[in-house]
Image (cartoon, rainbow, N blue to C red; front, top):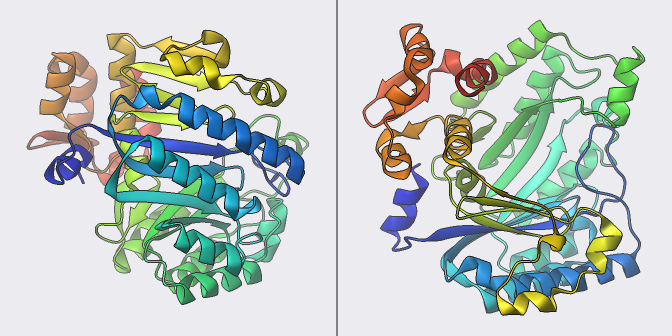
Length: 397
């Protein structure tokens, strides 16, 4: 899917996304390095009040653009009172130019995705759910420090099916402790039975300052080896293809027409505003990163933004990207997509020829069939996709 063409055909020529960060979790997972933590109700309420002020005060950043997607992530958004979710969505609709076919996604943990919450999400016009399942094996879930069980997931899916949500993503993770090739294939087959419209499948990354990173350094982590993970990735493609899923990005598969438009926006150079603790925005070639210190965020006075001015003290960083940096980011994200990079759009944006810019480095991968030139696009082949990180590092660094 070419997202710009999709929105243009709907009559929207200035698309934009919105991300809302809910940093709260019932308990932090052993592999997680995201900006998230536990908080009591009174602290959550205080955060939501500041977040709502930020949403209203920064509406000038959208500059009348068409808000096509809202993504409520975290943390665990399903952990907080659903009334807060309602307030956030209503505030965005009141202050921003949201389109009729607005995609609204909320992330769920099966442990906190109770029926009453899901019913309210349906009432609030949330039309896409993203469930952090990770595995269907309870031993593997426990090794990851997940608070939910496979039985919790089954109950959540029962609620979702009863409420007739039409667009459901399930997050899965391979290469995790105790996992085998057989247990991974078993997880995939169990998940497919629910016929989700979208699957996001990630390899475990051991991030510093996480419990799993520490255990691995101590030599007490039972991880599958590299060969096993490669076989998992190969089997994933084959199994999902056999069941009607199309791979449209390195880690994402969907039924036809059910791509995540919000995430596809990130990979397609569509601007977005991030609200909340540590959230990032990308507007007019400038990247903004919100304050990530919780106590500082809670004490921000967003009234100063009413004058349509940015105060650098309200951000951890504001980075104006030069052409070289923009090209690097455009290619790194664009080649993640299966259909790759449109060279006409590339030329219009940067006023340089894609093939000439990358010269011999690109030719090398064209010759060994890792990248192909297909009409107006350059994209990875399946072989190239499997080693995409290596190729991107060579092209861009």
